[in-house]
Length: 408
Ligand SMILES: Cc1cc2nc3c(=O)[nH]c(=O)nc-3n(C[C@H](O)[C@H](O)[C@H](O)COP(=O)(O)OP(=O)(O)OC[C@H]3O[C@@H](n4cnc5c(N)ncnc54)[C@H](O)[C@@H]3O)c2cc1C
Image (cartoon, rainbow, N blue to C red):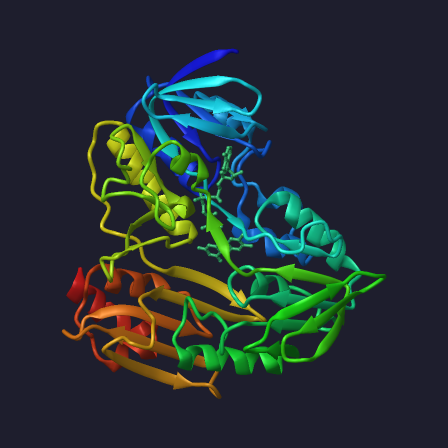
């Protein structure tokens, strides 16, 4: 059994892990870093995989760093191997090939997994890893009809990058799309847009049976039957917590972390989709599940691991995406129970904006539909707990000059 030691070991070569490496190297050339990941390639963007599946970008464009990033950064990659056991007392991680890796500090940037669905069916796939994206790209290449289960950030972008002449079905358990992300009014507006883009929307429905053949037969709970060449399951992700739980760390939905991204063991940190930390707006612990949160938590974990204790203010929603040709941004808290809301624009004008305010009339969230290039301003408003600046702010960028001077 071979034994290796690094000052810092990171498990997870993605958003959180990469940002941790960049941050560590900003402050120290000396600390040794070992990076473990069961996937055996330079880090890539999961967010871009729907573009690759839809043929809009080649696979090579998905990578966000190349091999030189690791060699130049003095990082030892231990790729193609899974971490299978954590011994927090001995400060050791065991890999599936028997290698034991000792650490001074450990960052668990393990991400999450798609919940399995009818595993082993050739025309059914979830989407989380490169291998899933490759499978779906092949399946969808000549598909005439595609069904997707769950209306979130996995299925909707994939359907929206398919050619319009492909029959597209979206099956949603709840009474609306993006139910974890958006308020009812904004969701309804997007649903109208989906339908006008030719999508068949099956709300309050589920898949009760799948039969395989040349094409898939899908029986829906509502009684309808569909024929499809592929089924994408984008419903439910599960944070990777087994290693932490079996290693004795505190875990709820995700690995519990404090404001320093530290777990209940002082030398073990967690960040990104695997971690459950404070939400900036509500103050409650949550698994935020977006790229920017992984980056921010990775950065704060790294700072503290380097001895520069730095509290993270908390995560928030920050998603900017394109769905069926329409730009959408969701920032902060955008639920129906927000104390106050202010809207501007309408469904006919193709430009809709909605601000969410707390009881003190401070901005806690924003939905922008049709034009999102100024979403950073709304992010700053939420982070700054900015008092509602007046409805004019929602009307366009040329109003920002005076406002930015006011909040600067
Ligand atoms: C299709 C899709 C679209 C998305 N769209 C958006 C979007 O529009 N906007 C947005 O903000 N977010 C989006 N997300 C979410 C975003 O990709 C994640 O929030 C982000 O990738 C989280 O980064 P992470 O570093 O926490 O973990 P991950 O990116 O999940 O990476 C974790 C890594 O850890 C490795 N790993 C896990 N366990 C082990 C182990 N035991 N041993 C070794 N290695 C292990 C995995 O192989 C993986 O490489 C999307 C996700 C998907 C799948």
